[in-house]
Image (cartoon, rainbow, N blue to C red; front, side):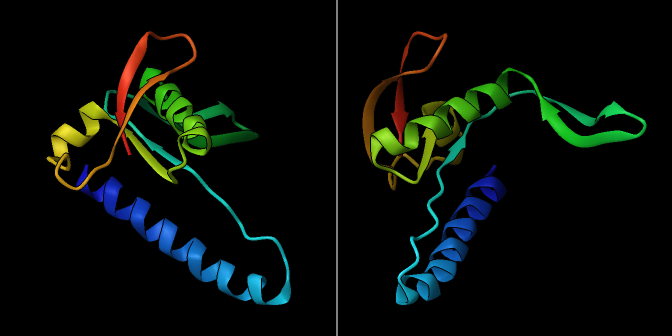
Length: 112
């Protein structure tokens, strides 16, 4: 899991570097949001033999996508569910952003 967190921070650094040049030219900056969650997923090639992708599917990926969707409203580029943060023991370096409603779920507490 620390690998996921490290990759996310590296992605945000890479976007900042990409945005350095466009900002100087007046182009709008690239903005991304990252949502991380922990759980079981089915991974593999999905689709037909002539068109397929390697993918991860399951409730965990749907939840991570919904967390990512909250990043803009929460004002954070990287948001994780509390369960993820607990496994990393990142609570000391996280900012508690309060409870957020995920589509199709009860209100949950998030860290960003």
